[in-house]
Length: 630
Ligand code: URP
Ligand code: ZN
Ligand code: ZN
Image 1 (cartoon, rainbow, N blue to C red):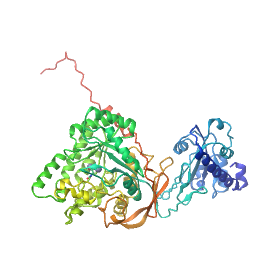
Image 2 (image 1 turned 180 degrees about the vertical axis):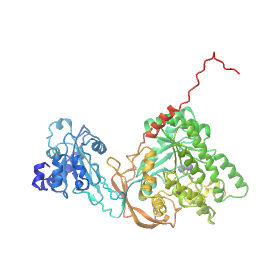
Image 3 (image 1 turned 180 degrees about the horizontal axis):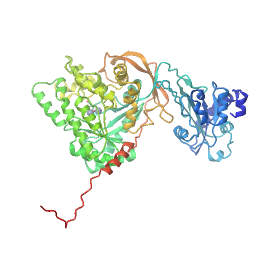
Image 4 (image 1 turned 120 degrees about the horizontal axis):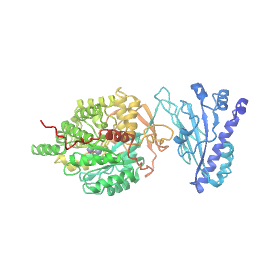
């Protein structure tokens, strides 16, 4: 809109041009459906500010004068503004960064239309963006519409709008101040929070373990995740000792093809050789793996010793990859298991007795020491007890980058579960480390509140009762693992936010943002922002339910949270901009989840590289001819 048009006070040209854009968009989509085009990109944008000047008078200094007068003439109406000479950009984030007056103010809604034209016709394109849109409709072209806005009210409630490429039907608008294009779906989220989708960085779908295979595969497991507001998992590829990491990786990628949410992989190091060293490099450089897991437990199976830990952690440092550990002293666990069995303790209670907190605390301290010696950060999975938490807090206070991950199970369920008279009930809760006493739970909550623990995960590794029965006569043979992915967010909200241990923002950090940052997914994931993936959760803090295996999506017949009342639930989940969970129904297609590669060398590694270099030991230069003798 020109200054003259604005002075006339008539909003009609704006509406007309908007409609023209949408018509053009539809026609262009039909062109795309017929053929598509992958040529160079020419960009222009239509930016609408919605009452933004009223909210932020200083914005007037940053906007072109004709835009300011247009907005002042009709502050309630959409103001169509245009910027000539837009930068070329391949993403909305790039485009925003390149705008002379990026609409970063609260309340600004932004619509960009990205028109992709073949170079031959691009030269003929009219200079006026409005005409160009209509003109472009007549040419074979591909377009992409992205909508984005950040309308933050009171610092707590958020709204976002985003459209998927070529798919106006799934445009989503949330919030009172945003205009959605014609044909877009508007979701009224009044009274709810809009959160970035949850990320669970510790799951085991279809995991071959302890003589059986975890009962949730990537299809049922990620479907269960979406129903609980978790839109991405990072699962574990666990090649056995002597197995090639790359073979293992290919196998897990194949299993993961049926995922319905986005997913990624950590890879476990269960042995050491030149081949392992080499393949770690290939995984980081070519396959989007930036984290390697080490088991300090499961003797004679997956366990590695300090020598392997040091070799692997050092290699992680070279690659900019994050080492992770399952911290339990496997030698001591093995000896305690033998002693308990000899003493006639064969039931699930023996599992907890054979893995006391000290065993975890020792391993956590040891792994932290080795990470310090190797000069790498460290991520400790399923931190379950005070000893391990305090080791992490101490290391952090000493300037070491160590991250701790309590599980939602350890935060809310305690060791008394293993003394249940019903064997199947107790066996269903067998996982490593085991549930602890209330004192340990308090320590974990304190760690989340104070920030010494960062991520809440599930270690989702679901087994049916018939599988657990493999250990009916010997607790050491009960497959270790429980479900939880579906309930992680609701249980954490109920016991964390509703009790004042966590703010809603701290909840987002623990369930999504921190994992995205630690595992180098941020800001693609873990945030609602222009350019981020549209993984969103409409979270109703007043919605309630009673958790039950009878209504869960996970493929097992038990739920460790059975009977727990929760308040605070995901009422709608969007994955990649598409509504996948609504009205308690899943709308997913097998295989529509994407494998998300994660580059190595997160910023933290750059920093540590500089630190390591500055602190590199240097030899003392001595002159052999000079002797200082007593
Ligand atoms: O008991 C557990 N945690 N099972 C899964 C494997 C592991 O240790 O993470
Ligand atoms: Zn583990
Ligand atoms: Zn695990």
